[in-house]
Length: 151
Image (cartoon, rainbow, N blue to C red; front, side):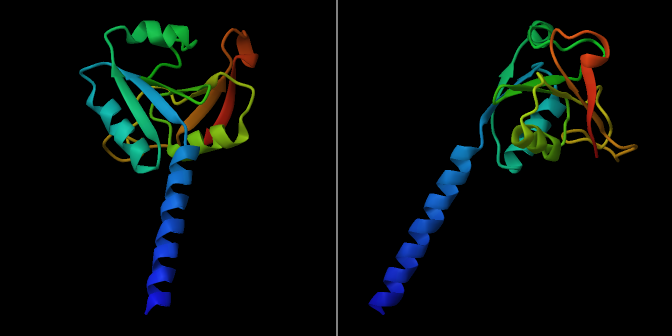
């Protein structure tokens, strides 16, 4: 009986430590959004459900935040997220955020322009593949925007 209790205690301790280690390895993200936008909150919840720690900052100065990260009008969506030295603009699926953070390309960030139906945080059915692009702030032309992934 004592051996069974000791084994269960040890298993519980190992499991708890693994959970703590997993949460510590996921970087905290800061999501900037307009105070009235509900789909941005939906995206934050989606990221949390996928293991990310998200700090939400509602601001009336969202355009200034976007400009500081090099987000142009063509790239723009309704929220901007800063995570582990990168920028993620819009309703980018978590698989692409994971890819960005694991591959660590030499870019400023990635973006999914607009607010596509069926994307994380948005309602409705997915109408077409999500085309996510990478960008590098301050580089002109084709060097500025590159395809990143399609889902």
